[in-house]
Length: 288
Ligand SMILES: Cc1ncc(C[n+]2csc(CCOP(=O)(O)OP(=O)(O)O)c2C)c(N)n1
Ligand code: SF4
Image (cartoon, rainbow, N blue to C red; front, side, top):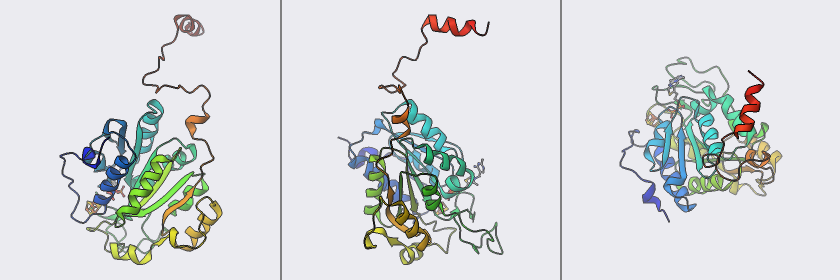
């Protein structure tokens, strides 16, 4: 059985020292090892951004796709080879700005993919512009007088479009982060995991200390029930979305693949998809 070491490779991350993304990398490697997955059974599909580099740092299949497009690639891959564990990943810009449309539809479609967002409330790779997750008033090179836009309430949005798994975590909490990724992988359907992952170089507001002061753990909320969507929404709204842990899970709703009638028992990559000659000729006769 593969261990944590089997998911490490020789590529040295070029993230800034202290970047929150190091913990996300470590948590993914721990979570897949704990889940009994082998490197050849895993694919990590990332978008573009500092966070997007993560697919190159794990010893598994990987694809560093394009900005905001990790999810279409990840969903296509999972549909074609259902035996693979597919993890999609990227930044808050990737998932909640340019890729928002894909995020919303992937959530409601519910294909069995685990989506990990490294949310630093800023665009890191392009050297520090306001992201849709930046708070109103946030000062950057792109908003020198402070952002006049409201930040997107990503977790609330996920609940309203029918999410079956919504979790949040923090880079400083390696144990909690590993556990929520394991739970996301085990979930039969789409899991959205937003990780507060500080950018130490460009975001001097939402620092490790800032998150420590502001985050509330669902385990510490008396009577919290992660199967209650109304409670999940209420708790998020009350705490400005700054809630960590398993926020919501619906174990009843079948995944997209389970709903497709006649969906191949085998991965499509192994199934015989060739048309019989007779069917082919019948089809062609309609056009010729
Ligand atoms: C289609 C397209 N538009 C814009 C860019 C420029 N670009 C690269 S990364 C990025 C945003 C990075 O922010 P985020 O997704 O939050 O990731 P981070 O770098 O913070 O991890 C942008 C706008 C691009 N590469 N491709
Ligand atoms: S710029 Fe920010 S997000 Fe990018 S590697 Fe450095 S600390 Fe991390």
